[in-house]
Image (cartoon, rainbow, N blue to C red; front, side):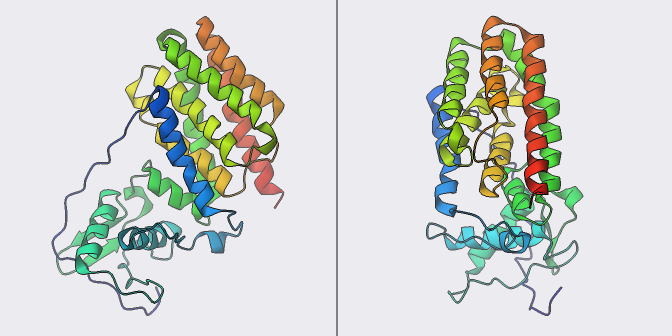
Length: 291
């Protein structure tokens, strides 16, 4: 680590706070998707270099708490602070240093994510990756801004391959008419914006489709992964790993999955969903390899 003075956080360790997950449906799902994709408009076009993207991203809307959380979280996840090292002195870019109350709160959030451990007189030190809450959406976003984003995306694709085809099979018997309508609406939205698949309108429809699919499975564990999938899809768009024009075959598969779920054909829905996830992973590798 550099010679920067280490920040000594509050001596008393806070208990980790379990992150809650909200499962949205119908109009609530659309609202959640819109909120998730609004980050695209704020962030603008991302820098494709690993060095630039690993830096803290500051927007005018961010509070001092959020800026420090992003700075420290990105430092740990991006590798600037390695396991066993203490968190550095806050760098607010010339602004006033955060109060002890703010630094204490941020440390507690990082502790709840498994990124740091806090011990009396030792302060906050970074944890190894094995201790991280790897499915926390914010941890996922930081990983996708770091130098190993392609590896992280492949891991997420493997998770999707294990979950989404099974969710499609279950949805064929568990989905409600509202789920059928939302899946069809989302598939149509993807087609409507397919010439701009690397922009927020397509992303919004894509997230809505996959969130709804997971919820339609009737499995609360699957549904709770909606934000994980949303963070994955958002990361692809933010880091320019989406084609400008969507693959027509993949679009057809989304429409087909919606129809197969409506028909109650679980086996076919599962097989088609697996094709969608496999195509997505292959596309990431192809686009990343062209750079």
